[in-house]
Image 1 (tube, rainbow, N blue to C red):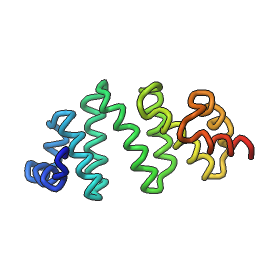
Image 2: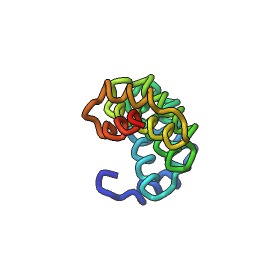
Image 3: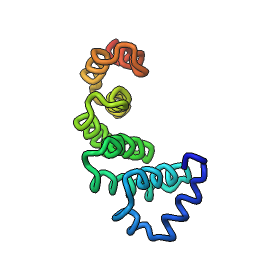
Image 4: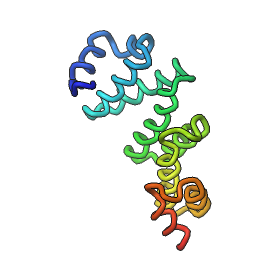
Length: 144
């Protein structure tokens, strides 16, 4: 994956058998498989790899990050409720994690786009990340 050879990573997993890989691969191999599958537009494989990572290595930092990635995937697939659940899970498991600001911002956008009241999320976001990437959007939501 680091060399950009995603096709080889995916092919090796398919040769071994995806179910066997989900059940026995290391956390780094599952992370690599998920990344390769995402780059090759194979979201079902990426999702299974990330779910296996979370199930088999629940205390690993990569498992927490997988929750965020699953949220992104659900959001991209047009499943906002599922995305919200994954973002909430990420924030509950890793409230100060490297993706916390983005998870909060994504939640705020999902609620806002659905016509919901995103004011509290926007306010919360600004309290924690006044200069964050979603700060301007949060301010606009509050002004509305």
